[in-house]
Length: 622
Ligand code: TSX
Ligand code: MN
Image (cartoon, rainbow, N blue to C red; front, side, top):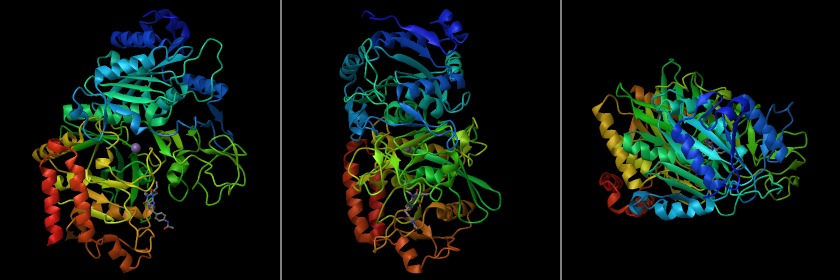
């Protein structure tokens, strides 16, 4: 292939970089395999320039200025929201695209029935055609990053190339990005290559648009060669490849092969009035209030919750035989609508400044607004599309999937241990979903395998984080349906095997299932949720300590009559009964549905799972 334009290689520190390129930048050595790969991608994508990102504050500042000049982002009023920006995306580039997310394993069965499979050679050919010349007229940024604290035995490296400076600044917030990560790679760490283009080459002299993207979109993963190729979108999960594509889809495959777990889980530290602390890892499908739980302000005196992570956890059996976890991310990419001083005051405090908002509305004085931020909207806004908006217009001011991108360091509830390279010890695992019926407020699994069954049978009513019909019940095992890079039958087997390994070592974490969203016969939520969820955390902690009593139900252990702390809550006994009611007839229908869902995995489904639903059927018939 011939190059139409020879890429010019430079970094934020151009003088040293240009002279040492491609062998080094900022006076550092570029690992030969990274340099060779970058050169191959440049030959294919034909960028006008190559910029090696060092992750410095100055570099970020220059990129932000450039994004303002390009009209991609707009600076908010610095007196109201210091050093913060709003991005308005293309109207067709607002969410993850599951229909365009591909797992390209050699054998279709290794992708499994929950993924879109593409034959790798064919997909490679298709992507090569799509990427040819895709970065013409643009700068290709090389973004070395670490998932997990650099130097942690649990961290993993990657290098993303992208032609979107918006993606670079997002990666800068969400990962440990820059020279230190490249140094770790130079020192011999494995790295995952991730190629990203917005798919909008610029002809000479062509004026750029504010949010370049392409109608044709791909988020392709090659699990066997550990590669990611993403095209056509600059939006969050499609483009910040360190997050869903790497830290979940590719990492889940690495985890299977290396004997650990890469999970769609928040991580919190819960401290009891006694001062004793416990760590919980909790999996919820997208937009179930995971970030709210990760930043919970308990309503009950003496209890505290601190944040380790809000979206992804990597779990491993430590040298001491205990389950340990890190948050591989460095920031929050949270859903804005519904976030308020009542639902999540900690998030509101986190967002005081240094935040990039995407697809929110803006106020006339240059601040942000979204549905749910205040009980009533301001009299006039500029909506997420950039149009004048007034209340009662019948449209939403902010996009339902609008986001904030902010460093975790800014979170007032961040735990001092959140970057502990050894991870925190996980005492309990929690599975949740958004369920109007059938699922009680909290149930404790009878043992690990029953817990795996709970994880495998998570279902949630659809929200706006992905395409799909809002309100529809979707089975979302382990909240990993869109994020598991291999056959989920094998994934269940891996969880069961992981439990066997935990049993051989020290202590097996307890497993719980929660549902904050159960509705009564009158259609209203039965549980106040939010800060009162700390009452459920209290019961879990007391179960761990062996002090809380429980009753057996067909679904598992539920709090005994006086087991759950309801002090100061105005919740009548009938409502509490409804919250924990087990309806055998309705559950039998659900078990049939689970059986049909499990059947889609065929012979890859481990026998333990059908055994678990037969045990459940037997308990329902008792
Ligand atoms: O995040 C939520 N959590 C977890 C909080 C730690 N949400 C918001 C979900 C959308 C992202 C909830 N919504 C929760 C919850 O526990 N519970 C509910 C349902 C609910 C909504 C409003 C009320 C009560 C429950 N309001 C009043 O009762 C006044
Ligand atoms: Mn998520």
